[in-house]
Length: 163
Image (tube, one colour):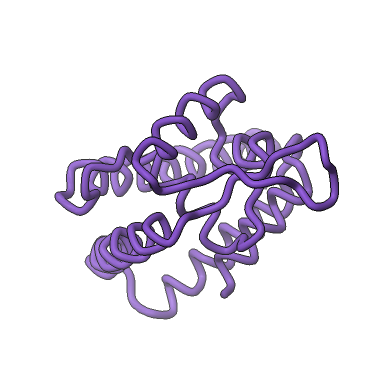
């Protein structure tokens, strides 16, 4: 295959991947499953759900792809609702970590179960089991080869996907 064909194929694959993700994301956003949470607020709860000691606000921003000022405002909203709390960082006395409260963990589990069902339904409409496994594996391969992402963010994302 020529370089031009490879270029075209890569861009067609990206366009299809992007549109599929955006379509399912739109369906998720429109679904009545969020219990009053914004999707980005849920993304923070999800990121914290596997981190019992919490994460620093910068780690959360990297994980959820939100700027530090935006993440700070989002954390304030989640704190006011009793879903997250700030705790001292045992490794660095100057730093604070954000972790889920029991109410935050319960909300993440309820909404997460609804999100999981919705995603499974959306993928199952078009793909069989083996294709879903292939999609997961190919997506993880793309993620592992991405540049510019912090290695620890990639590792957390991959761990959550595998477990």
